[in-house]
Length: 189
Length: 163
Image (cartoon, chains in turn orange, red):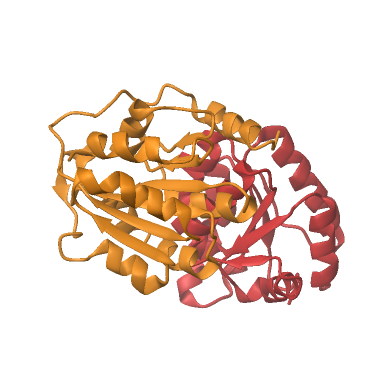
């Protein structure tokens, strides 16, 4: 199961109006390819901060389901966010981490997630629900379970490093247009 | 320099529309954080760039955020400011303290203290370093500037403003 395979299962399993925050790198590109809507926010920089942005959204809008689509390199760059999310405990936040044990967009250099279990970090930090999935057949049901329970929830998805090359086009929306779009969707402007 | 009361400062921020407060502490803004905590309005973060990420999420959801930080944390935050806030037009008020002001501080603060205004200039972040007499007017300036440019703005807190 590659990143694109996993996103093709995860995204249709989310509530249709879920706000999605995509980490920079291939998560954004593959997430956009799997289906864009007005509640989607794609990061093209500031690696590590998708989780923090999702936390801010979830705290400010507790009635909206917020989903962070993250990667192992991103989680390891900002592990403090696991602590902040667990401490703030927003019930409406689902944090999905696609773990290919590599920085795919910079050439597949290894991360350290083969030795540091990211689901274990989330559980130790205090996420209310944590699951780990490694095969496609179990993934959709895991997403359905975790969106049905009070969060914060963490879904650790073990994936294979995809073939060389990007899993989708660069995000065509201008960054400022993405800000305006999501604020409009949330009735903020 | 006259000390400005923290409760009046927080009132002024609220009146200007600021309604989301996060950050990492510095002793120079201790009373401000204590006042925000007293009102259950402060979200403590682990790192300054993570605080900026949370503030960005809050802005996307319709809030007008303030991030409290020591100038040492501005160094940690430069990538978030460059590739998130400025790029995506996500405004944020940086309430950044000036450790190392006029070279009179512990050695770890001297380099950042020397370059702080120039560093903000380099990142094209408008900034003011008000004394107590100018603080309330500069809060209004910062809020207006953020709404006009949709970019981060900094108020620099010199030693003695709050403590």
